[in-house]
Length: 94
Image 1 (cartoon, rainbow, N blue to C red):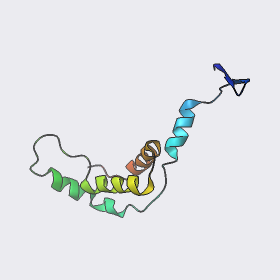
Image 2 (spheres, helix red, strand yellow):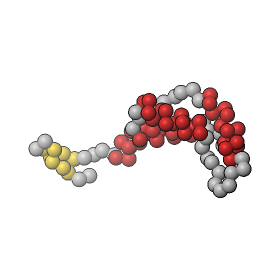
Image 3 (tube, rainbow, N blue to C red):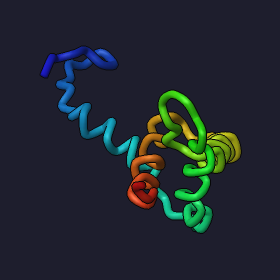
Image 4 (cartoon, rainbow, N blue to C red):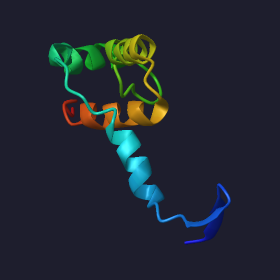
C-alpha cells in the first residue's frame, strides 16, 4: 500500500477497501416479516396481463415497500443494497 502522512506521522494504509465496502453493504441485512411476498406472483401476472413491451419484474407493492423502508429508516444506499440482496433470496421466481 501507499505510505501516507497522517497527523505528522508516517502511516501505511493497510485497509482492504473491498472488504470495508462489503461490511457497509452487509449492515443493511436485517430480518423482517415478508408475508406480503405471498401475492408476488399473482400481482406480477396481473400487472403484465395485456401489457405490450418488456414485462414488469417488480410489483407495485415491492416498490412501495422499498420506498417506505428507505424513507422511514433513512438507510444509506450501501446498506439498502445489502437489504435488497438479502430480500432477493425470498422473492419467488416465476
